[in-house]
Image 1 (cartoon, helix red, strand yellow):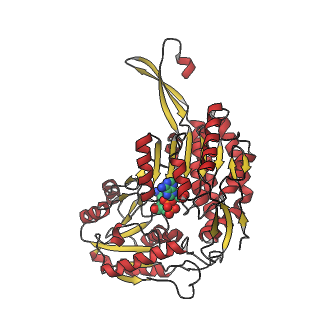
Image 2: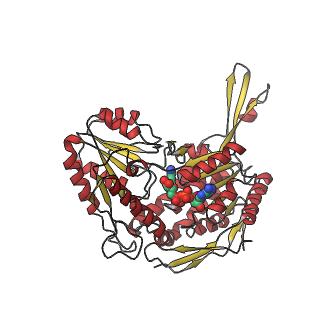
Image 3: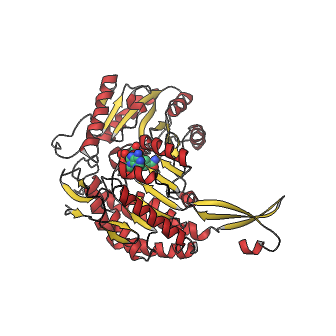
Length: 487
Ligand code: NAD
């Protein structure tokens, strides 16, 4: 068990400052329900100080004007400084949100790999190119977008932070980062590593707080871009702000992704994909396969295997190495997920397995892996994001019908097809309207663009596109002799 951690200060303008706000947030472990830390709940004055520090650092240009290679070297040093702390960081994430320690041991180090990928992207991509046009030569120049407010949810705190901070910084932006109030502890390590690596003051600012802190950030007039990952409801609110102020927006929001099991699917492969896709992180994954579409001809067989898969999870103390599923992030979220299970029952769906709190785990925010059958795509359990280990199985007769059901959703983040036939896989992959798609697996690929369509958001968070999204394009129409200056 991690000891209580107290972060009394915020990183603003290169120094750890006592916040103007005296409000505090208690961080509660969802497995023990004990307070494991306390951090400032930053108010508008603190947000203002952080954003102005970011703005001033951007205006000074001591980071913005360095080459991408120079910036990448500093950030590489910060990532290297995190390496020996990964065990401690993993322990904090396990305490904060209940991610089983064995999974944290794999997931946390992967974040550094993703960070290094973004650095390589920036090193390799030139900042300007000259195009010959009918109007003469034109240079297309990429310039950092400016001050970025980056706001994250709690379901993958360390990896999400690296995935937002590194692309923005390597592009030359100045950043104010706010983690979720449930999981603010691990990010202090990132802040320390960045300062220790020699980032100029104000280029990176770390502030903790809740939704109101987030609101103060996104509405601040000196913020040029908001990179937000979280709920569709908050994304909609931020979208309104972006519409009014023309801030650049990157919104990674919710999902209700469908895994389509075709009639030729291999059951062990399908179950391996669904075990991860539907239940990883206790189902608290935006891209989770929370709907599973099964051909009526193989319904009993697939549902039987899915129930066995759900029942194979060892739910319990995330610090126990034999645990494969930890608690949900909080009591409030547990009540929400149990509420949805109640809604499913009252809508007439059948609980094929799970459906409540596991026996003996009344302390902590646990929910059994749950599979609903006898459901329709009109039910709330098939339409709304539950964000827990709850899967709704839907029967279909034809592939056309399966694609129609998959697309009959407000969301469009992810999806999958399970089939032995590559041609059928390609056909379904093209027809399902989402930003990301997996075949015979659940694949979260940080080296390719990830994001959604429809109510799942705007923009792409990973791949080379993540770095590209922190640049603005400027066209300079050239006169003779200028071309070498931009090549
Ligand atoms: P949330 O929207 O409540 O909070 C996310 C973050 O935004 C937190 O830091 C919160 O303090 C802040 N916030 C909340 N309201 C805000 C507002 N109006 N303005 C500015 N900031 C605000 O979401 P959550 O409960 O922390 O996370 C779960 C949600 O995140 C799910 O809907 C999930 O699908 C989504 N998510 C999406 C992705 C993706 O990549 N698409 C990844 C992970 C999680």
